[in-house]
Length: 99
Image (cartoon, rainbow, N blue to C red; front, side, top):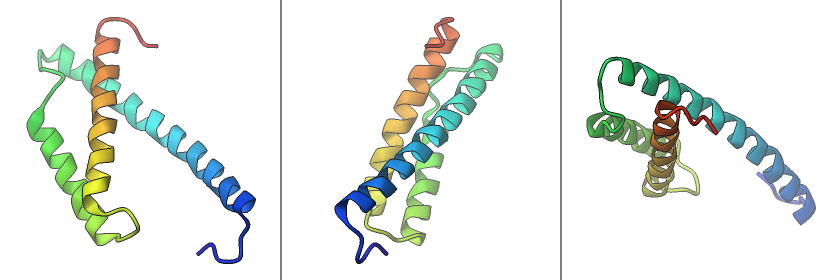
């Protein structure tokens, strides 16, 4: 994939990918905040372990299917953190603190 590229070129690629990841993570968390608003309106708890288990199972399956340098366990750990931050954002939004 990156054979023949310099460190600077590879780091430039990483910077572009990081920008994309930050944008996508913010879009994902914004969706989670909206879900949180719906949960609040319906009297549901922010933390829903069955849904998180479902998401992690799907992520693990995708990571296995789309094999790369990250194994499925590593991808699951990353998504666990993403979901932790999503829950934190949901709770902040519910408290009226959207920062």
